[in-house]
Image (cartoon, rainbow, N blue to C red; front, side, top):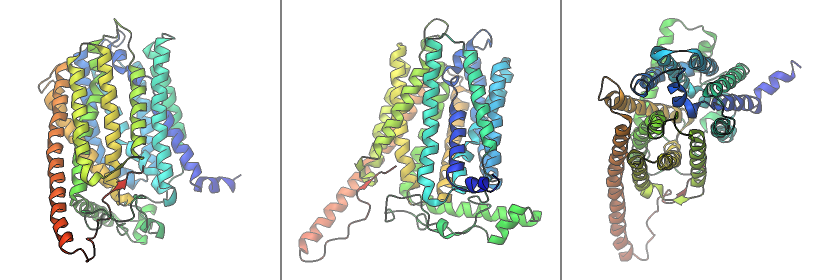
Length: 495
């Protein structure tokens, strides 16, 4: 039995199954679509203003404060301890939700939920340290898909229990607590990685040849030098081994940490030098900030349009449909052949207009069903575009640079979201009512749409002028060799 267990743990199947089970049960939280109605119940006795202006902003602030330290610590301690910390934070969050009272306690709840979202990075990064590179794409797909399935299933279950069984919101939170406790137990069975992407990197032929792009065979035009290649290992094998065994003195450890930060800065400088990656990252950061803000406050708007005490609500069904619709749209992108270099930013502009229109609809309509429809459109279009953006950013980046760029993009999105929260929501800012907030968010996406529409017009006009310049040259030299075509003019997004 002892001989069998190590061989099982060292294969890619065992950690993948355990990680997927952790992901499923950590996302199987049927209470989430009905959080605001639960907090508004007489048992909690919280007003809409207290929830909006005093409680929910704490999540944004704690997430921002914890993200960068957690990102660094996650790699240093090799993922598993942070996944366990996430499981503990889940349990504390739901225990306080069930048995806590008052604004201060709910603010502590939001702090621990900020810890949950900040430590989420370990869930997605863990798999790269325990499976071989040829399994990365498949395992990443499993880990991401299982969370979507769990969230959808939890939303459907919640709606059925509320609508058909007339179950109290309190017991939805009990189910969520039981689920996250099971997730925590599974986190204990994860094998401890022997390496990580930065602090405990180990050179190998597989890692040197690895690229997250499995679609394009040639580097994209305009990419910064080095972004398409795996960077050298940050440490010598001796340093990596010493780090793992804890034999480094504090001065040597500081040098290693400084070397890692310098390497991060150089990598980011090279990657963001690519205009293409920079503009996709810019859209990603600004749109994600807006999306998180909508996700955080949409239940307040629904409760404003149709108070849960006076009407039947369908938050769970709407969340399930929105997640499913977004997943289908994201899946369909893989079968669409588009010249993203030429038309990508036009797509960003068009769908940003759609997002702005859906938010304006949610603001102006008095009908809760129209409000639900606006949210379905908004979430589905965002999930479609974020899938495209994720691929466009990650293509031809090594795993390390992929993680680093996405981490910085997330941090920038959080900074933008925090500024929005301080100005629009917080009681120390404008303290706007929820209906006016969504008018501001709609205007925010309209500004994003205008910026990328102007940028896309510039790109299309430049491409047209370049083509007109090349055509006379070709006609004057019909017997000569044709001009060299760039390798990335038309490509298919494979996800």
